Length: 284
Image (cartoon, rainbow, N blue to C red):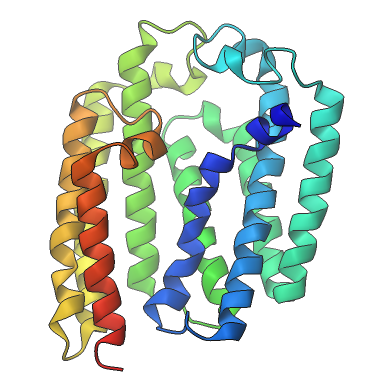
């Protein structure tokens, strides 16, 4: 059971908090019905994500055994058999799609699209430079759309752009950190051979600028007569710049570890969240 839970990667479920974004920005998260819809949608995408992790680790078990960190994964270490992992993946997939269908059939369609996208990434896209980070970004956009579809809240084009560029920024940072470590790591990612530090830094600069510009447009358009929404652009910019600084030092291979360990990132997140909530509810 411990090996199953570890392979499901519950720490990665924090990415699915993006499902809260659209209903949160619309100010409807206080409605009991919406809370139930969001909870089921979140659980659904956690199960769907875990299903892809099970399959991914089975496929990568031979490469993972050559990696200094990944060799401790349960399947690579022989603690969990591929047959059990496949059964767990099938159960997670069915249950995840069922939960999504209970919320809305359209959400189940988005969930199925997410599974197809992540499965195709495992099979093909992760070996192709630029396309790999593009597919990762698309996965985050689908999470944002899932939150809107689950609750009937329309997703702004500018918000979708912010999500796309933000995901591209984090994914490019992950590749940058992996490229820096590739010289020291056996069994590194296949697509890294077609990346260069210059290309990734250019991609990071484009993604950072795109995320900040699209967020500013979205925040100012949404704020109306309240200054709080506009002020969220300051901690948002601070967060991006701080993360970029950490990437320069070689961090970013495990984005969730960086986000939850750096005090300045945590402070920027708390400030942004506080101002964001004020912007939504101060006038209500």
